[in-house]
Length: 411
Ligand code: ZN
Ligand code: ZN
Image (cartoon, rainbow, N blue to C red):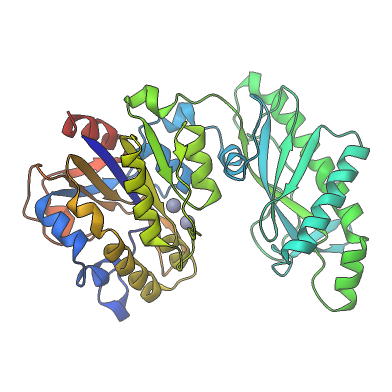
């Protein structure tokens, strides 16, 4: 038997009074495919990590793929780097960066825009280049690269480094840029590498303000009353380390269909092969039908495990747009139609966490999970949403229970 694992990012939500339920509950009134699969399959409630813990997406995914977060999680920066095609050597550390706008106030640099007015890609690319040249000139063991819009990836080279340092990004406006520090409570042998990493980060932060603030692009932006992109904020360190490949851990030949960099990074780190789909963007207008077709192609090509990631439900919840989220989920239901006709295939549909469209952030409530195969134990659930699945035959499971169940069901 083959497996398709569909992860709808941020699928769960809270009660939205205008919708009379969660966005998924609202959407499920119009489901054809997912309700049919629920009817012919087995449902349950899943805590991606543990009850009440709102995981970040990379942690939610790793947990569902059966990895031990406490021991095997390398930190987000590693996945982000892999996701944009930057290959790290073992022991190198990567961070996510933002071009941002700061105002100098005495000795502090106060953040007034964390994205520098969503600076255009061309300008951002040029500024990242300028900073990268300056880093080289200073002889710092690092490289910084532009990715999308205001975003980039910073790679620290060499050995004896660690991602376990605090962010320089205060994550709030009106607050000063922070100094990176080693995480509190690190074991003794990790303190020195974390200290070294923090020092390099702090030097690069200072350097970025020095060279970017007086760059031509920013002088021009100031003249036009646009926010200068005059610093980089650094967050989410991760170290390149070997993670047991998914194929060795579970005995499948895995492929993936995903558009977002983080998800590509996670899948690549686990040794899954990429199936490229034209028009897959990770946004609400993504090519959902193409992505489902990509899964079928992967099965035809001999892969026996396909991970399909669908992103935009999460973005719409972060943007506090529950109705748009419900509409997007209805589109997913339509697009998944071909999966419900597969033979010898187990289809699992779930999410990596719930995201609240009221609070605009991940929350620790569970997500629904559905196991469907032509021959599988059937329960009485025939609607797929957070509430209806609670009476399903799977009961309440945790993210790390998914792969053992998959192995058992596929014999
Ligand atoms: Zn997520
Ligand atoms: Zn999210």
